[in-house]
Image 1: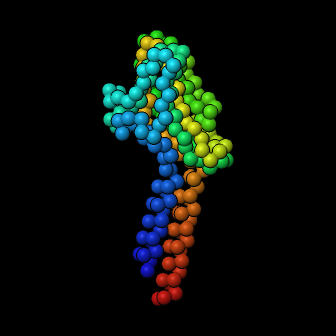
Image 2: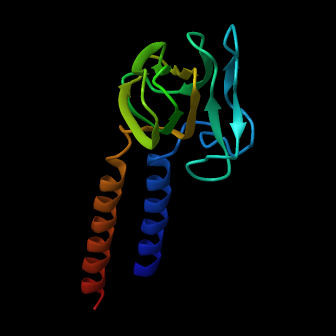
Image 3: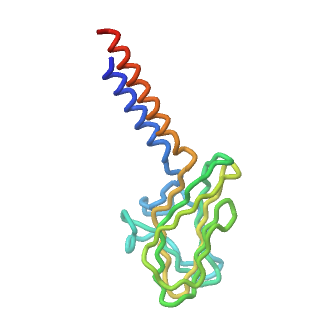
Length: 189
């Protein structure tokens, strides 16, 4: 009986921990080799963006942006959210520029949460932001242009930070079940 209770607790714990950190972005690593899950909007002039395999952060593919400014190419995705919950937005970005004549912007729900302007080249760098959801669907968008180089984007992720306490509750539940099993075993003997 004790073994069954422990097994049940372990399965429950794994199920809840897995769902607590579920990524809400479709194709965030662009591993389909295309923009599946994303809406693409080409720049009004000199649009140059897509998916390639020449410089991924992880996996086989990444997205790149190289339109001539000041017109930006963009990709966006609608994310199902819960109003009032906090979400962690993260991604890896590289800028292979010869001179600082570029722009990269991140928007959440139509509001700019980060903008890089006229950046010197840099290797893949991790960016993370915590943002509240104000609606049941929030748009995540990336807009970029780079006159003399290329921006590379990879490993885009959105997770709910509000779900983090669930594992602690499961540990408490598991501890209680083990305690009950121990007391029951003591009275059986």
